[in-house]
Image 1 (cartoon, rainbow, N blue to C red):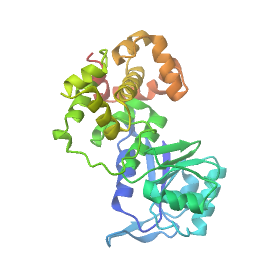
Image 2: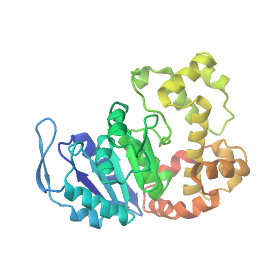
Image 3: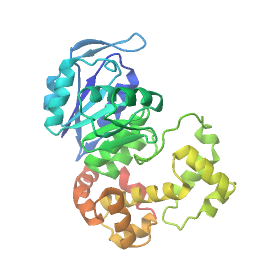
Length: 332
């Protein structure tokens, strides 16, 4: 079981706590929880939340020592974080633990010196301050989340959903992560390189023809879909389709299709015993060579190595009665 210390830096919102609690709490491997999450703080007890609520935190920073991953939430330490917390984070860094921040809590990681010389992301409005105060940190504002070695950062509260799903995929594979995404009524796991949406409100999904087009395409990933096919389905021109896809997903239509096909291929590698040629065909990647090239480029691992790393845990989960993942990917 993977242990996560969720370090609260008050004040904090309920969203900052509920997202990781919900995401990690949905992970079951062979019928058992994949994560144990401990909420902790420098001063256990009543912690003030934004909006006037109080949260009782039972654990102190000793939870950081027990953890495999340390996730800092809350922006209370943005100006001057507790020295005890900074010391615990530095020790965690020296121990090689995975260290994660949600939005503004990256300021705490910066004060601890954990991101000097590293690339991080943060909500775009906070980026100028982070750059000014910590010039040794490379700040990106064009992605939802970013991983630089053992350090992961997210661009905002809702981007924490994508970050948690990425962590689950890293630990337990795409099939498990996508199953959690479905439970959370989130989209399939999206790539770290997806752009932040700065100021372009979207219509509700049910009234958005391009959201319906994406759903249509997800059911036909095994088919040779072109820009013309997608434009025809959305009743738009190729130019309008491309512009709206970029605005809504941060990717071109073809980039989005490739990402979804790789996710389908990962699920098939994890949850079936199909040959590599069959996996490539069902995911729309064409040939085993094409599958290998794309997967190595995206994840640095061959299809066979990926299957060896992740298939066993998923197959155990399916055998334990959690078979919803496979039913979705074996129909084509």
